[in-house]
Image 1 (cartoon, rainbow, N blue to C red):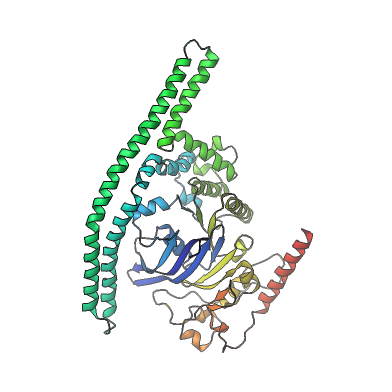
Image 2: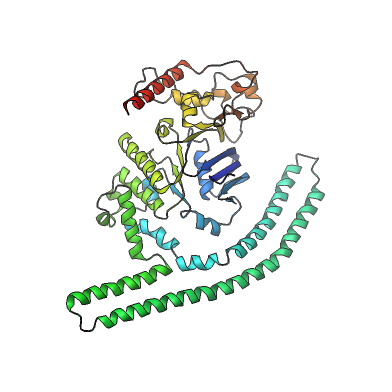
Length: 482
């Protein structure tokens, strides 16, 4: 993981428990997200895009199970942390914009309260300062507790696997697990003692810091109160305002105040293009249009200054004109806040001008990954061809090509390439073996047997070739004009 990598997803596999069996929603997904980059994840409904993003946010449905894999954010594995730790990351570090703004907003709560709520709940500054003082000791205790649970969970999975695999030595595995648990328990006792000591010291230190700030504020306020004697009305009003401001300053040292949250909400609403923010803070969601509601959802995500923003089909419920405005807004905010963005959509055309890299997903797997130029001008997977062929453009004269068939039933994942049944270029091997990711260039790879050295040479359909030619021509003419 390089210094510039913000997020790394490795071999992520997710299933859902249903009455009919386990649905294999995500199967071995790998990707990285760099600082300040926009990665678009594209695919049909049910391809696993939203499940992947919700797992990153730690909001996977109750029947969802992470079978294997890791999600590293700033070096920490998000699949292994407790909900209490996730609460500090969710919103503060990773923000999310959902598909339908109306379902994301409380219809009977004023917009102002919905925007400021997160800031006030997460803005306990003195408490956060206190927790930082014993963070390492607490992390050590959490890690040891998790290691005990992990060891037992791994043994349980191995026990299940042993039913079909007689080569697994369960007695030896049990012994290894028990030794690991015992070692962690032995280390846990002194670690808890160290945590208790660090907490006691932190309490004393924070009390000293707070008393010092209170003492300073009280002295300043007393000086201002003394100045009130003999002051005329205009000067007295000015001094009284200074006293209010000094009390506010002290309160802000402890936590985010209602006044501070309101000021921030007005600033963010203005940033996302909502006119008259002071007035509109008091309105309800139903008093806004669909596009304005989506801007409010974006404003809520931005109030906590996240470093990574996940946009889960944020333009699907909007008309084309408003879609363009929202995309432009996300691009603008990305540049201004230096955000890393994961943009999820089923429409390749939506991300044409905003994605740095594109991951094409199908049946829970990434089947093609590359830069925007790679995917739009040199697509290699038949599914990517199908997506491009079904996408209209300004100069399109050919009939749009519908993708035949339906995605596979993920209760019974296909043995080979999941797209084989819908792929007219499928070979015998596609129905027998899953293709690996073939490297095309340093930035481009695709999972299709058509890229194997022994595969017959297959050209993209004519409709795709014509589309690429048009896009290249349009881009070259726009560069000449600029």
